[in-house]
Amino acid sequence: MIRPKHYESCSIECIDAMEITFGYKETVMFCEMNAYKYLWRHKQKGGLEDLEKAKTYLDMANEIAGKTSPSDVPDSEVKRMIRMNSMIRKYKEKIEK
Image (cartoon, rainbow, N blue to C red; front, side, top):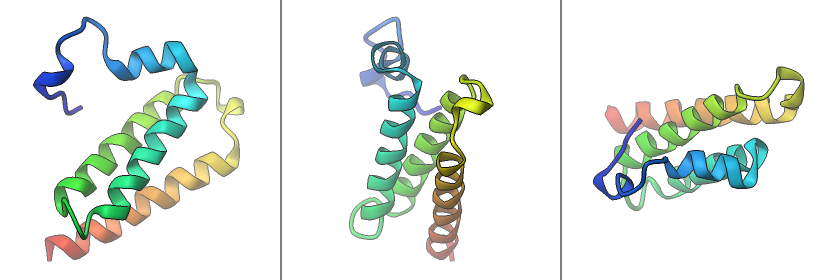
């Protein structure tokens, strides 16, 4: 996981505090929405770096979703994560060429 200096001021990771405060489902949604944001803007702003950030957020979403029992994660959410991972791979391949 990427952990810049500005996240080291506390003994707990922000994402962990979000899980405690908002719950797993909402934190997964937050991660997915951040991934979407980075996908949306990657061509105009950060290029490959934004795709890497999107991938990082999807990895976090997958990790957090794994903390709930599989029956708690609806098929629609699993399918959305798969689609987003596929989109990141597609865009990343285009940029790296």
